[in-house]
Image (cartoon, rainbow, N blue to C red; front, side):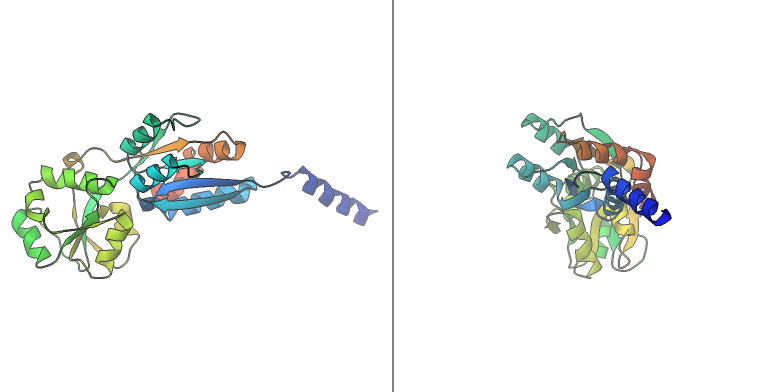
Length: 246
């Protein structure tokens, strides 16, 4: 009798679960990899659904969605690209929310504080190039150029850039020792053991860095993940990684 009841309870628990697991697809800026993987995995285990995340530069993501890529949620590194999607008819199931913030730093393969002067930066570069994301399309590059201009450093480095498709690619270039300096988000630098932060770029030297989170699908699992990411559990991994509240 006891064995029969135990079997019956297990059967009822199985029947009480979801009829079928659904897959939620998230498109996200490359700089979010790590904490977003952790948050999505925790949600998927608790919710009983699958989740897959595709990472790229925000400009690439926006264009992919515009061309029909099936994204349920999108988390970009710039409100400009979220606005661009909205203007092209991808307003989303709900208005985008300002989800996270960040800051910019200069990194190098070797330690040693760097003074933010034309002479000091030129000396550190030597014959090399400054690795950073593309300054005309990728948010980290756009923010970075604004900061370098405000600090009076842009003219000295404009012809000596190694522009990459996303900020993680710029980070890798410095970590491999192929560039003597890089400009990346602070959170990227903290995630890579082979680089050293040599200078913090002042927050007031560039527009505030904001990561908008948008829900593009009306599916129940996508709505659930959208809500989860905004809660304390969903934000925990990002704050631990060094991201800032918006």
